[in-house]
Image 1 (tube, helix red, strand yellow):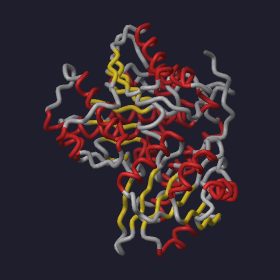
Image 2: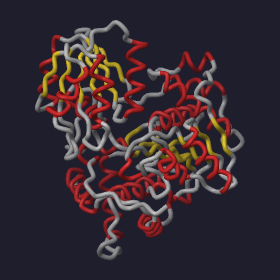
Image 3: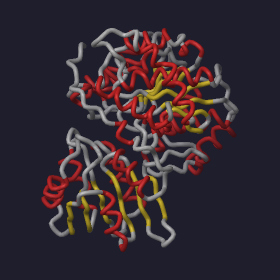
Length: 430
């Protein structure tokens, strides 16, 4: 196969939907030679901030001289973003080879039990990281934790960033139910580090940690980063300081297994890069574009706080696209009052909210703004040529599309749609 054919094969795996459960992943990993047993992991779950925290941990440990694997999802533009070693994307030829090696193994699964896209990609990543002799893998959950395919590993540390309402159709309708799924990554005797502060969620994490005899380290969100680390952090937003505190607490908890100097910590934070999250781009003509993949209420709250602090008197244009299964009405209520012009657009997903629905919701809370439903992001990017400050948000899918159209990310082989899944959620056994 060539790379484009391999991507088409991965597209075909979407027919098997997305499902919770570890049996397939354990079995496929066993057929592939148990690559997870050759690796050390930091496993990261949570509602928001997973990717940023992973990026900080990766950067710190890489600066400490380790060879670090990074596994995250979704990707913004290229599928290869999901699997990186020392922040180099897996090569197209390696994707082709790994898929080719796993294909015969997939034929050993009976009808009705074929591994899903995410299960296959998880084992691909494990196999690649083992082949690359990674000293450490920073390992982000896909969805939830307890029954997420990534949960076949036993890590050095389990990290839970925070708990808020998101993916309720999969994870439960209360913070306690969602916390139970996220806390499912806790392993016996393995330290747990969390910045979760909602009492209902924290109680669940504490109970799980006690039952597993896992030391629990709580990072208070009111804590302050040391002055040097605060100055070093290039990522915008107060919430990123909490993510940095979480990363620092994790590094400290693992100092005996993996010693890291203060110099490496500082350099790691100073050089961390995580696109699409409060990413400010200044174009050659001086116009500024802020791209943020805020896709739930907690993420939008962080975006609003960042706008108020960093761009308080700025006349803003908002480009907004939100998935139907998110709380899009409340997202409109929070963001629309902050903009003078609003373009509502579809997200490249079968689950997209229609731009007309978004426009109606925005007009209900901001009758003075100019509001335009548009059929595509491409059209909007042409229309706001005269606007000085533009915020593109509501979905990571939308941000990825904008990055590609703006030429700020390498062009892909139409890989953004690999993020899409269509299966109905299962009833969760609790």
